[in-house]
Image (cartoon, rainbow, N blue to C red; front, side):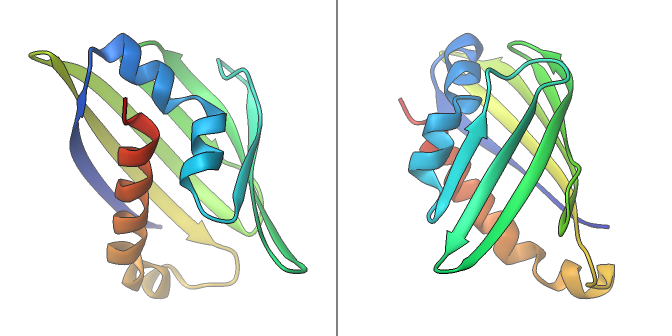
Length: 136
């Protein structure tokens, strides 16, 4: 499975950042061509990030596996064609919050070595999205 991680410093305490990070409407606003469906999020909750470009639609189905607000969450991608796991940790950093995002991903029919070649671009896209989603 291909993987990447990043740390980002976000304004505000962990409780506020957690609320912004897991607000599905913020995901919809931040991620082009994608609508986040489901919620509220919590242990066992399922949700979908539906990306649509013309007649092409990809549903990224996910389930919350671990949920410990405002510090830690694990989300598993359970659908096709996208699979993987996201682990997010938040910790106070003065008046701000440090968000650690770790993600493994796989695409059905794509060898892991080939998917790994896209990791820098995938990481950059997720980092941009997380910054937008968590912005005050």
